[in-house]
Length: 143
Image (cartoon, rainbow, N blue to C red; front, side, top):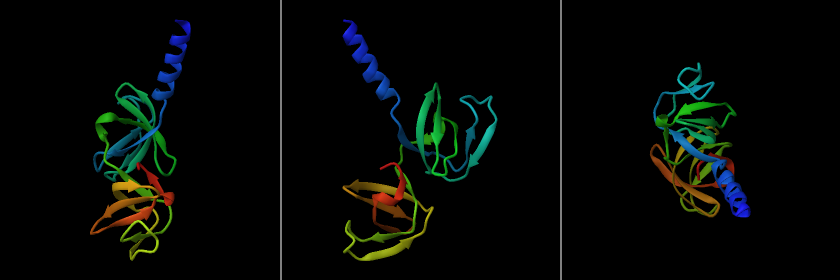
């Protein structure tokens, strides 16, 4: 019985500490110094669908890390499961998921892209009027 309890604790503890990506639900989201509305605001994000990495949980708040290594707490009502990424370098958007397909447009570093789907090393994304494929290796966010 003691072995079962120990194994259950290890499995549950590893699942509870798993990191995952979410995005900002609104155009204005407050990042706080602690997990409560009583803590002061550290940063005000002004970009809907910005991807953030969830590091910890505390009741209705989540500790996040953004693509610039800013860290703090956001209320869960301000987070969404929409998939998005930020480009880490300048990229080429391709018509199909291969570098041998037609290049459509250059995408600059820091661009926010909505992810439609991913397969293997590629993601199909949408940005303004463009839709196409980019390589996963140079993006940050939920895949």
